[in-house]
Image (cartoon, rainbow, N blue to C red; front, side, top):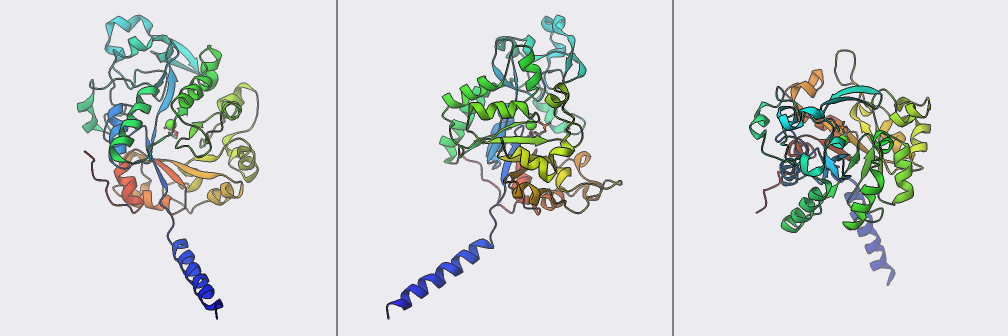
Length: 353
Ligand code: G3P
Ligand code: CA
């Protein structure tokens, strides 16, 4: 008699489980450099817009100042994203350095105190591709990581959402070589800001390997091995390690990555490559291989501008975004978080007060 209710409960549980199993969770949306499709990259305005458009995480790339402050730029050479070249007071700072094995001429964050860097203003990196962003030239400062964390906290308080942080260490071997290592400062600031544990809303990423392995000794926060399409990690070059990114994306390479990282951050071409005419081909086994190695997969970077789209998806960014998301990745970077949200099948995010 009393076994019937138990059977009924089991049946209901089974039905519930199978119906939930049919609804895959939306992949995590990472505002790549903020929302640079609409605002100059790596500005508080760009990060804030990404949050307003529904990004789950915002991504600051990190370099460092002469006085050891982590600031948000994609490169330490800043003439492409600030007005430094038009500032006569800094004309004498122009120089040529070798960065990751390549000669680079310009102005470098490590030659500026933070107070000096703060007098500069951000400019649009690719004005021909994003002419609408030029109107914002001269309006925004180069933010510090601390300021981005403050933006995250105030946005969380205002929206009631958890906003994740996805910092990337740029040129880590180079910065350690000039006596300005990034890793200890980063972990110190994140710890002081309350980030702790494997489930914290943060991922620390790098294209290099040895600094991620060093970070693993400093913190248990989630780590992401970025995987370029071609070439090799610069620290491998320095160490005469012959392995390339092509080696790291093999099942054996992914297993190696899983010994220190949680996520494979893949160039999208590792997941769906293009043929010789620039059209998308069939997906590779990358997502399954990474999962088999115990890694999650985050893909970079979905961009709606025609110049970044495959030949068969010009003027059809949503189609390209959906093709990549259909591979089942756990997260993706995009320059246009509103389109990313639409591609993931989510309704537009309504601006908060
Ligand atoms: O960090 C993911 C993606 O941003 C890597 O490319 O060059 O835009 O930093 P990049
Ligand atoms: Ca990045």
